[in-house]
Image (cartoon, rainbow, N blue to C red; front, side):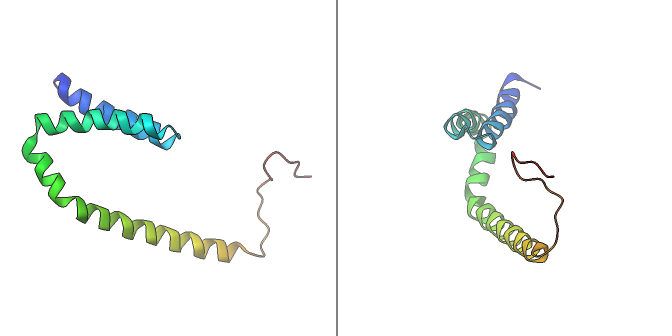
Length: 93
């Protein structure tokens, strides 16, 4: 594995971790470095990815809708039942 591949994979990984942990600007900047390296190293693959972006966005939107519907059903089933989850910062007894 050459250094460019390592840079691409590590920047996407670190960018995703920063984005998930709430450091969105830093995560986007680091992921942008990986994206720029990917585009310069593999222009054909980047063009294909760019053309298929709307398809990926549509699929991710469907996935989010399914997850939201599932969580809504789960929360409706939990109403009225006792849940053994202590309140944040509170005493459960």
